[in-house]
Length: 275
Ligand SMILES: [Fe+2]
Image (cartoon, rainbow, N blue to C red; front, side):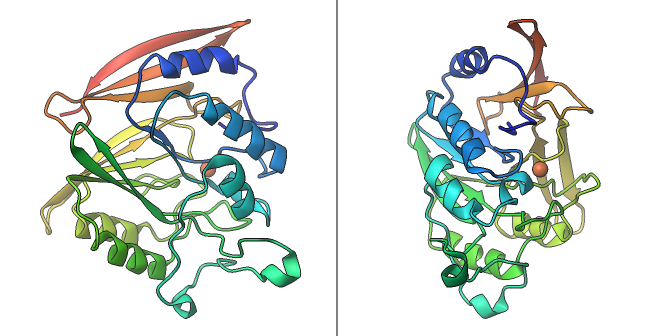
């Protein structure tokens, strides 16, 4: 969404009406809520998210949301006050600035990574949403801390669920010039937990890719949503994806493109058969 100078000039109210017309069970927000992680940008993004009529909105931070030492505080205050999972052993963490000196900086939450689980039950089907933070403070390139994956695996092992999905900001299959540096360990994590669906954002460009590991006989699909409402869309239009009958044989994906036309929005919708 890139609230701030990179947010689009379109009408948010009309966009919200369109989003709400789907009556979604789950809304997935794959990060870059802000442009520069300023407090007023987080606040505007949070105000937008509050107007989505959905009981289960899952938001993760993007690299743009980590451009401020107060990012973790602001994300929790305005976007979602999630139960962030702390590393089993903080001495094993390798990511830059994953811990800050809270005393010196005057911040309330000195841990900057947003790894968490959400279990959502819809029509008696439980979906475990695994959120892995690929972003680092002050950096656009992605990096995943292996100790956090180990910690998440430990937490997932304690859960029971019918389906499991993964949310990451950076793509783990196709990258741009600010890629996820160590995507291999995330692909292994996907295989280890038999995750079938991965959702990511970051590049402002739609891609839907199925990857098959021929040696381990494991496949997964990654959906990379384009931008919802950013002016920074050189590669593609603003869009949202609607996953109908998610995970079922009859699943299809609606690619809903959004064009700004004067005071109005024009929506076009393609239906992509998922199988
Ligand atoms: Fe990004």
